[in-house]
Length: 195
Image (cartoon, rainbow, N blue to C red; front, side, top):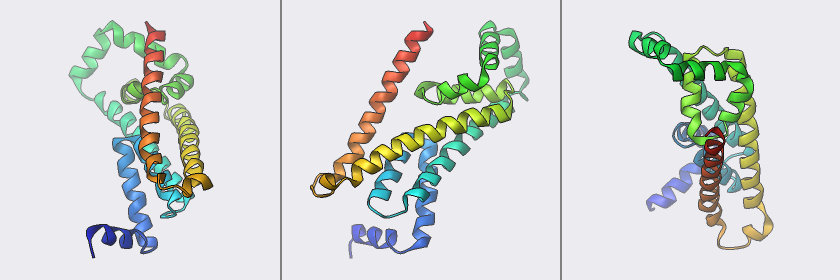
């Protein structure tokens, strides 16, 4: 039995492998969120795991990753040098005001702009944005984005005409490329709006 067959037997071995797959999707979402969504949808299309569990794993991974960024920023407040830079730099003061002015909407929008997630969520923690506001904005935006992308890929992959072709495997790379393109386009559009 080759390595490919061994992996396939392990993946189809039952509930224990579903737990490992969920953990793998959560870990992958810490690295590349969109790839984790596409991978989970692909696993659901292949009936390796239930769509609900795949969606739950993605949501848990993305939400805990965003919360970790918040607390990373919050812990930065305890470093004197970082605090001094933040208090004396006029750009930080402007960011502080902008982030607190309409925190929910700003964080909601930041969730959809690829280059701003890490910085925006870390600064939210550093500037002590209210945790309920942060969680409400991030969780609602995450739910919308995850459900939208997952559903499109799942239904596209489950369609009868695609199931009948030999090119079903092409859905995942095409979806990843499309998501990367959309993310870059959103990033450019938002960056032009700021200048």
